[in-house]
Image 1 (cartoon, rainbow, N blue to C red):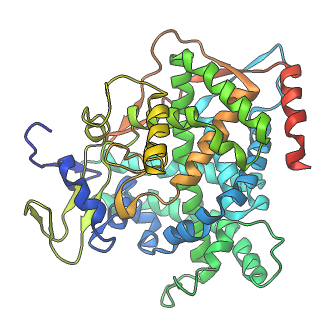
Image 2: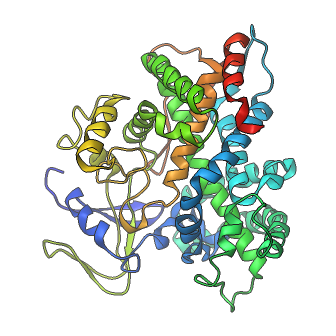
Length: 460
């Protein structure tokens, strides 16, 4: 920020040019084809080895943009229903006088996986216990393969060759087993295409509806059902893992700064009392939305965002600075999100800082540029520009569902005093401490029963 000059770093063994935030506006305006995000996404964890060129198709992106986002209210019903099942399944019944310790990140990952599997592929798969366990192992090995490969001091081609037995096993056994489990569901959705609208909406169904505009590769060595099943698997991972980490971060922040617990509980309780566990609650949670955005700002998961690769022709910025084809670029997330010109006291955590900002902006401009799902130069958690994460809207809804379930149904505590646990860092990526446990105690039955009576109509 001081010099304004770019500098180079190695990020996942690729050379990236880190740019000053002043260039973000040009990145936002650039086309998807000119500054490509797709070519950088599979750099992380060296996923190109076992995922192949899956991310080069725009079908997954537009399935979310044109299929999921217009149907958020419909999908919210499935998410709320599945969240009730998932919390009971993963946490279990608790006695009112007893507390249960859980490994926070592990349990939040399991719950988010169940909910987003329901969204992507339907209820049958989300309740499939074998798929659930296999998926957890696959997601874990995505990280482990990347970690092991990162630590090998070898040139790229030699590294990929030496680790071939590891990632090939991961591809052919863990990944392929999951794809084979999803394939029959794709086939069923194909048969249901022209059926009535009574079937539950999911991402596979909306992807099939877009095949005329975003066709499958007729030259691919994989069948259409295999390709779509693989896309569904990657969507489940992408949509479940990040919210699980963010939910864990939010829980730790609540326990570290306990003054936020009661206001968030009261807000959530009022929203659910008014609307039940329904789509209506999401517009009644301004404090929670602000808390989500502040957690994303203060404890950013990724050190560099957005990342891009110059394609087709050189790219020239507003001041004449030009990048040749093939250049990978990125921006320093923390510097952007702690910009004192945009954020007052940026190095202080203020969970409700965006409540008044959002209210005032909405009145003046008719929109909310301070919402957790709004991408800006100081909110890069979901990327920026033409390649901003299209799933950010449903991701924020998932975060609100997770937090509402937790603070409404449970009293949360831990055995720490003062600061929260240290975060783990891998290649700059910051992950909440996966060893930290929390204790959950069921709220009093009288209080819960009152809430249930007011909301029981939703699932009748």
